[in-house]
Length: 244
Ligand code: SAH
Image (cartoon, rainbow, N blue to C red; front, side, top):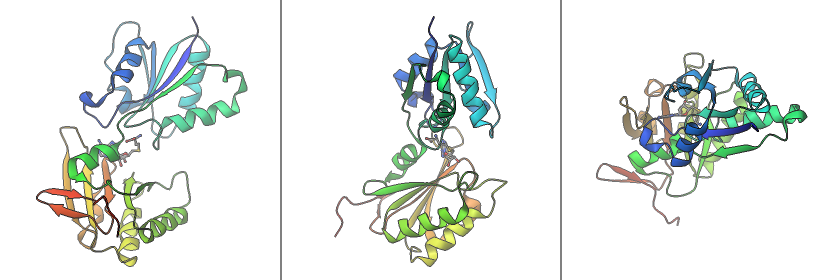
């Protein structure tokens, strides 16, 4: 049997947000490869081998998945949210570039509901106008690049979705990001903290940027800084469609 490689997004947490296309791919899989907490979201069954791995070994994981597919397995690489948003799809293509012998393997990328969209839906419509997404982790890019993008996004009045805002190994970057926004005159903007969206641990809070504290974010939090026109209506936060 010809092996295949499917790179799938499991959505933000709730099983109801796994797309039918991804469910079908999981049902047809012989092997699931991914970061251990994501692999744990796939129910074990006979004929299915789970290959959980650690956080920092993305490239090894991608190579393992390609090798299994080259040996005839039906492999699904799982990411949370969408696999193309700060996740495994790029890693698989990076591995593929270095391994020409695997370039004939049939590959599919199946989209998922990314954290930013699940978080925005909880708050209302903070991404209803122009927005951007920035990964605050400096594992794979220099911190000055992150600072520059934040400054320019603030200047351009984008709403800004921030992934990976803060972790035990990077406790200070998010506080610095808040300083940059305050220095750029964004203190009045609304910032939404959306933690563990669509899971039993969900927690959502919206405050002004000037009142935001670094401790309000952790690795399970998606942060949305609204644009300057964003308003509240009742408990909702929304970006008006029109820019004057
Ligand atoms: N591919 C994923 C993102 C992986 S980066 C996606 O498309 O959503 C990991 C970051 O995503 C976390 O640090 C956090 O910022 C965000 N994230 C993932 N799941 C989340 C959830 N359920 N609630 C809030 N943020 C989440």
